[in-house]
Amino acid sequence: MSLRRHSVAIAALTLALAAPAPLAAGVPAVTESRGEGAGASGAEADTRRPEAGTTAGALAAALGLRSLQETDSRSTAAWGWPLVGRPEVVNAYDPPAQRWLAGHRGIDLRGVEGEPVLAVDAGVVSFSGEIAGVGIVSVSHASGLRSTYQPVEDRVGRGTRVARGQRLGLLGPGARGHCPPHACLHLGARRGDTYVDPTPLLQDLELSLLPVEDG
Image (cartoon, rainbow, N blue to C red):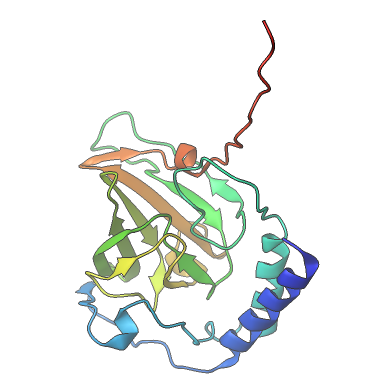
């Protein structure tokens, strides 16, 4: 990514985050969004700013620093990153020995409260709501996999068709995530009822074309 493109992207992000809008009030333990109206289509750009305590300038600076790690090279990664750039993995996938035991059925990515949460691949939002006070979005993909994101605020509605990299919502506060008090995004992956490690799906494997040797 060139310096000019990076500067334009950060300037646009700062302007987008500067427009104030209130966050939704508290909701019941399990609440699902149905995706009605233009705001739920996911087609229009969101202009809401993060919660109080995180300035638009600070958020733009943090995302800009992370986006410097992006490249324009071709990749065979099945999934794109659900946060801008290449976020740090702070907690790895650690499944339990038995399905009924406690474990970590996903990975946690370091983030900034209020930053956009992005779809890892094209699909349809199969769940958008809250469970036990935590905002969750699940997307079903044509591959048969389902990706899950939490905590997510200002979510798109259930039934919304999303493209790879499209905004699903905003990253919620650290107190509602897996890394309190710091903000992080928990990303899960399932095939049917089986949890799988999302890490290999995110690995950026560069395409290397080797020259053909004579003889």
